[in-house]
Length: 260
Image (cartoon, rainbow, N blue to C red; front, top):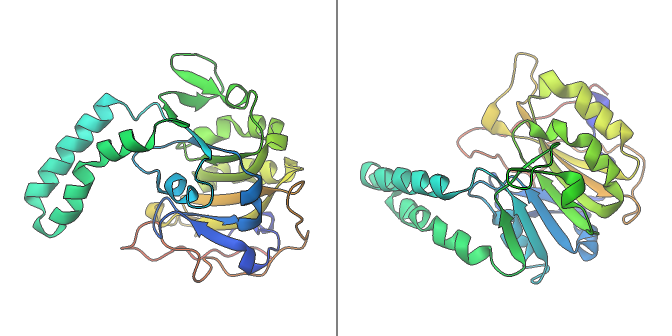
């Protein structure tokens, strides 16, 4: 059971849309904020840019900047070797693996022009060759959709996100290790004066702990200076039918309950 301050604020359901696939990589946002977004900044890329690709249908010329130090030559070589092995071993998945084998070429085609991938780690230390801070990323940036999935390092940059909240129109962030870090998440929500929580989803990949808490949560925030939001908590059930889907199809989605 989650504390009541993780229950999102009330948003009319017709204003919520899903961008990205109906599996891991898809996120729910308030469609009213799309018109204000000039740049998508994605911290954490791996081999999934489906959200960014789908967003181009709404704004074809939007700037996209991704940061992920793990997606390098070694990453693609290891992925290619794994896909080739699976192609020969898993006959039922051969068609899917053929597509997967050519993922590198899709990556090269997608990240070009005003769509850029930097092989840098996002953290709280500035090192031009290895690591970059949120403050540096947001230098001369405005009207940003910030998407974060950086495997526990999100807790290192929460203060910097709040400092730059005027520049952020929409924040999508995945929190990991919920049971251990729940107070950090609660404080982040409380300390945010501009960015307010409008949607929550439990990532079913990590399962539930002994207290019924998911291993990871996907949260959506919007800037209330751009979008008028009721201060009342909503009464929706999570996951929401028709808009939320399990990150991993072979497992049931995570049903979230709150203390209120």
